[in-house]
Image (cartoon, rainbow, N blue to C red):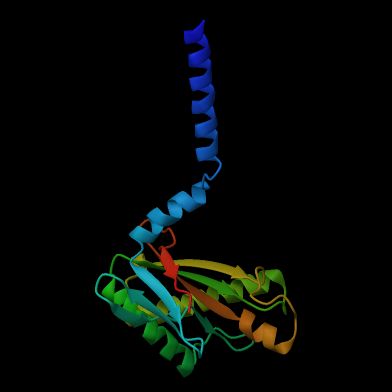
Length: 186
């Protein structure tokens, strides 16, 4: 009888200990965040002016990165300031030849959905053509014209429309998945 009571008490204590140790469990996301951070070679930093640079952790090297280029109304022409932005991002693509560049094209809301989708296509095509002229091979570029959906800024004033007329540049791994980039807090 004493043995049964002792086993019951031990079982109860074990269950209580296990329950209390599990009370502080982390989510799956938190478990994988540490794993992903260890696999992350690039850390994004933003300075006081809003300039983004990528810091390669293994070599302690900094590379400028421009996450988007912008277009005039109803245009798919890259002006000199936007090609300069792309030139900065070329350093990352040259240093990491296994990375793929995802290009997502956007427009403002003016025009029909069909017209805006075609304009978004012309914009990603223009960025692709420019990147290829600088040495990035076509197989390293994935195009995704999106059009007027997913605006960066949802208001419809002049400034919002200017921000929404863009092509976003996303670094992808060789399988086309977004590259893990750790964002540093400043």
